[in-house]
Length: 460
Image 1 (tube, rainbow, N blue to C red):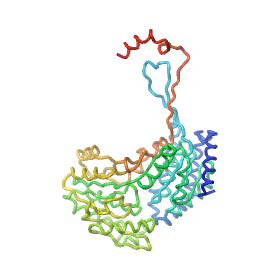
Image 2 (cartoon, helix red, strand yellow; image 1 turned 90 degrees about the horizontal axis):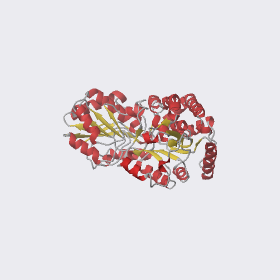
Image 3 (spheres, helix red, strand yellow; image 1 turned 180 degrees about the vertical axis):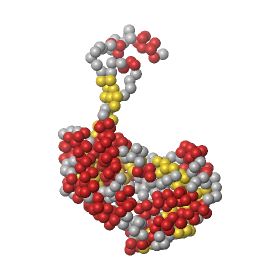
């Protein structure tokens, strides 16, 4: 059953709490079984999911396969390692605790709320759900209403394969999100904009609920002179225009050494044409903007700077061509907020110090990209900048490596997930100290008079 009624939301949460209190979801065999069911559900409905993504974003099947369905690998990874993840880990003890043992037990938090985003409406719901299941939680999931076909399909699939008292889908818009956030959850995992992230965190604070906020920001792409020009341009164009630029870690703007700017721009334009043809609107490999509101916001950015290539739009198709902008000012609107679309401003620098200063003058981004063979420069950029993650000589690919925790810092987010980090996010690590009955040394018991001189000698 899919609902957006507040009374039913309360009922869903109560039933999930009742199930959680039975400890059924804590059983590792149960978790593995549910992960296998989830994988089966995704495999059996893959084509329907691809069609829903196409209906919402005109997302090419290839981009759906590698951008959305990498969650299958996440499920396999969780099943493979869950027995190790759930084992209590011994903690070291000082010699004076020789009679004790210390362990750290991962335990599930309880009932989690997962709120997804529209740009990868399938992945950004299912990926955190895998962590919630692996850690032994129940979950309420809220897909983005801005991707209605995918939202409806997720609701249909989850309802078919899982009991609502374990995993429930709540569909709806802003009002539904507000009703959910008014309730007490044991954890909230949100993916979306920084502005909405602040609202989520404020609501969570009323219940002292911990949160993971996967947000975004203006991810810079710094290009040095010591590069392979062709590879650099190709990887930038792919990463920027994948999903029509609607990726939270897409390169938001380029910072290019002025010595190679002209050459790089020429090669960037070459690969736009090579990837999408002379008329990208006809390309089967190019997505569309999610809705008219975002289309209007993005088309306003086209008034900034000088268009080198692209700039064409089609309102009825929500189409904006892959666009490169030159002569952009830092005070232009396109540089004042995350672009989240197929527009790439190019800014030149003459000295690396000024480029790093520009990056550091902005809120901390979710990703930072650096193209260079210069190890000294690489070290300097890593030391002198802060970002959720860094990818060197490539774009987007850091998201696909499950052994790397993925998350932001500062305005770009709180917390991380993927692989073991997803399990950690939805777990509480409980410290357990155990004494023995082998003997009981009386050094800590009153009266303290005879013990105090000895204690002073030991700590002096």
